[in-house]
Amino acid sequence: MNKQCPPPQANGALIQVTRLSKHYSNGHGVIPVLRGVNLEVLPGEMVAVMGPSGSGKSTLLFILGLLLPASSGNYRFLGQEVLNLSRADQAEFRRRRVGFVFQNCDLFENSTVYENLEFPLVYAQVERQERPERIAAALERVNLAHRMYHPANRLSGGERQRVAVARALVNQPLVILADEPTGQLDRQHGQMIMDHFAQIVATGDTALVIVTHDSQVAERCHRKFSMEDGVLYEN
Ligand SMILES: Nc1ncnc2c1ncn2[C@@H]1O[C@H](COP(=O)(O)OP(=O)(O)OP(=O)(O)O)[C@@H](O)[C@H]1O
Ligand SMILES: [Mg+2]
Image (cartoon, rainbow, N blue to C red; front, side, top):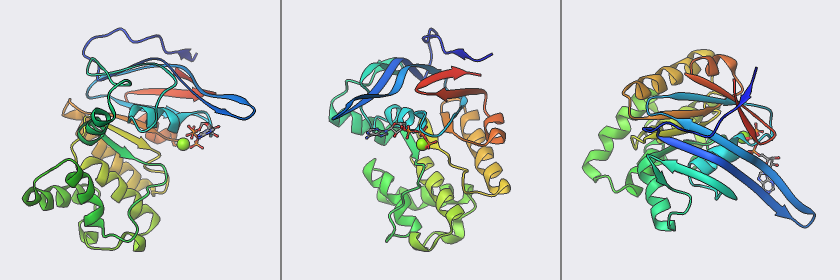
């Protein structure tokens, strides 16, 4: 039976989220989206989040990536509370710690694949000489080395998704937050992306939180959760 996740306890966690809530207000009142989410993720863990459309999965990932403020609750990353960081420190956190694969891929359309992957490296102040090698390695992992100088607006849907995955990895983040990264891929490429995520987390430092509607993708993860109406349950 599903059980609601208890508040995190263990030390050594990468992510510890406690009673996290998010609501929006409009003219008619308050819309609750997350209602007291608890989640703990260890370094080296792959965690899947499933659940119906509109249940709050993307909202949770956005808050974990500090791309959206929470309404209340706590979020510790390597033991440090990060929800109340200054804007500059939040930006630094996103740059150094997080690799995000967005649900809609959102690449820079008028730029090449190379430029799309270079952006996070420039942002993280990686030396110019170091960038080509990092970009080539990330593209090789998703089988797209031959598309390096292709304009993003001429990629197929699956290629776009693989570029978005490569872009999330190029910074060597501590947590990969991936929102349906295999939704547009055939089974073979979907498995390839999951193999690659598995390899990265197997090094032990990095964790993956992946939102997916595909139970075979979720099966590859160490733990599975369901989001239901803003409440997270461990399956
Ligand atoms: N800015 C906003 N103002 C009001 N409501 C919002 C806002 N952004 C999101 N929501 C609502 O929050 C709820 C959760 O959205 P979210 O995108 O997290 O769902 P999801 O689980 O990722 O769904 P999907 O599987 O369709 O991607 C939805 O009902 C959505 O309409
Ligand atoms: Mg979503």
